[in-house]
Image (cartoon, rainbow over all chains, first blue to last red; front, side, top):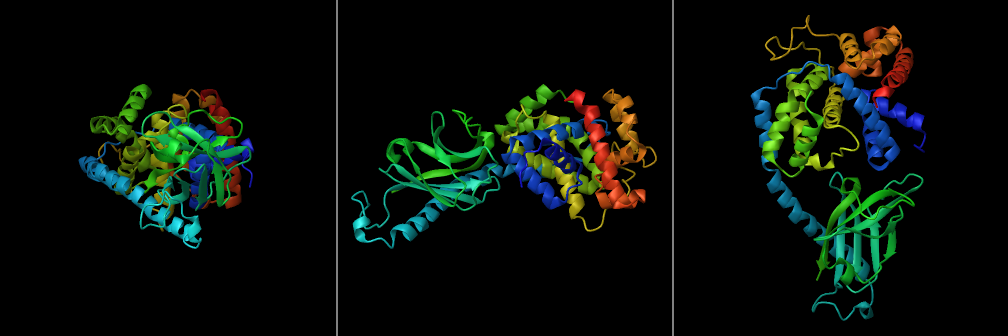
Length: 236
Length: 186
């Protein structure tokens, strides 16, 4: 289905905002709006209309317990974030190990490079596990420490409209993000890096994927537009 | 109506995990947002649940707010409406309880403005009365009920005693007219 008809998007956005789409269709349209600028624009226009109409609704003061419950729910967020921050690289590591074992395991021993740690069959690599906006693993990226190829495997490939590309970004611990390459919406692919992983990724904390208009890829990404994002860890 | 620039500042602070700013944002925005949720859900307990969910979500995802795309109240109203609509559609039977008499800030059922009354108020506040008055009666009624009560096509048909097909056509034409009326404000 092509969603590049402005009138169609306008009608879908109105139905979404006014609640006359089915719940499933509404969720799908909201997802579409995350990756399509045109759909997002249509949605924002109708959300603005709806908010203007809602401004005349008489306000109602919430009971004090409402704030207490919000405070309770958000108080542990720091701890949860810390736990997730620990979990993500651990999960990335574990999945990276599984992936590497499944790929490298069957290969003959001549495939082992001198950079292998002693008593290990896993090559020294950079591994990234990217999660989607709902926190589900969506893509794996891995590259040998001194290699110039980055393998990417999508667990859920991004849906691209016509004229859009998925862009893979490296997010260093310090300094500006930089582009590693563009990705196709296919399950497995290889990106040729501008330099070795060691030089490019040694100080990179995270990888991310944004959906951009082909031919208009920004020099710096807008983090709000990241469709996928996750930690990048050293596997040695 | 809270000052949009101040709300934008507060949201930016919330994205930096500033709890004092979060409280200020809640104080400024919770009453109008609860009003919206209550209109849609017509049950105070459910409306307050939605408000809690919405503000928890705002705390978690304030960094995703994009000022260039929408005003803060627009964004937060959309968060509340989406959650309220999810809840409405998930309810096996539609809530029909009246607002509790002791609800703070809520008028008794007879004094509460009807959806059509609210649409007229909005038209006056936005200086669009002439344009919105030109929307035909059934279309205007569908618009008002969908906007302020979140009625689905089937519910609109039942409420208005009309076939679903007619209701869909009325609402579609009403939304087209409404879009034209509101275009100058965009």
